[in-house]
Image (cartoon, rainbow, N blue to C red; front, side):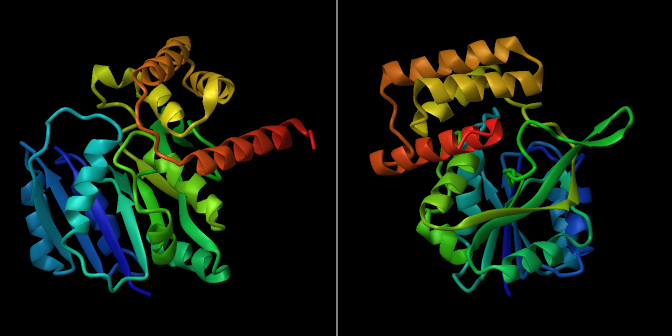
Length: 284
């Protein structure tokens, strides 16, 4: 089974060596790894070149986009810059970040997940961040969610969901659309991936309203946005996050931003979200 991996990278000199070393040390090696160097001004390219010389399956592509970092479009534009260089002879396509370290059995275990059920369309492990007492689960989402830095897609699922959306919320709407098309999303919770930069650490100040924008674009509606914003704010221990998220939702609604999903898909998304809320509350 052929795996192609794309890694967007912007000023990742401090981390990318560890990431690439964890890939070449895998029990199952990807067929191709494309690192998209997005306007880096540090030694990121030098490290990529050092690995490419020793491991021909690792290649680099250059992109000069905006230098500020915002969630969503920047990273997916970089992903597609790498995707354009690939052929279509793959079974699985992955979008990975440059600031992670994979356990050596990562791809072996994820492929085993895919092999266990042909309806699994998205699979991965879990992200862990370093705390005073060691590495702890990055609890800004459930362990059942495959996070954006470590996503692997079955080719047919990737095609049916229309690829990755160039917008904030891409790594949530992809799973929702996968379920809409009858696919399953699975995680192997034994795969603990080290996330060296906690989520949001390098986002620009203008990004604070982006989560609410994502909820709007996914057609959550007011009440689901309220619940989801409150839940995330609780996990982040930040009431200001809740205020910013709701403000982002209303700003997006007033601006009538383009949705990421159709009206029919939005109805499915809302029903699915309410169903999961009822399940957690023990309501049938």
